[in-house]
Length: 156
Image (cartoon, rainbow, N blue to C red):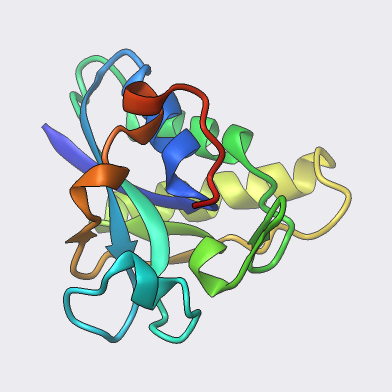
């Protein structure tokens, strides 16, 4: 098994999309990239902790490769909006790839460059590509939220 971590705005819908992806064996939502230890959803929502809402994906590389997960990630959100996805605004909603090794870093940098050169996006891709840090699992009510609650909005 391998691990991938992505931030693409509100984590509920992103988790559901990856959860349904063949080759993905487990998903969890949480926070990464900030300064506060063991942050709460309320703290992250202040936009002062530096964390992004993320989905951590466990996957079987014999069934799906990391580059395909990256393609799905870039299909799920608008990577050209800085610190925003739809009505959700703040650094916690930033587009981000948190890589777990050099191969993931190279794949993310390479695919980002190819997407930018492709002309698919009219504006520059602002997705940050940074080393994975501590993954802080979000509160249990956020886990598999859409599966448990239907197509609920990302707003509480």
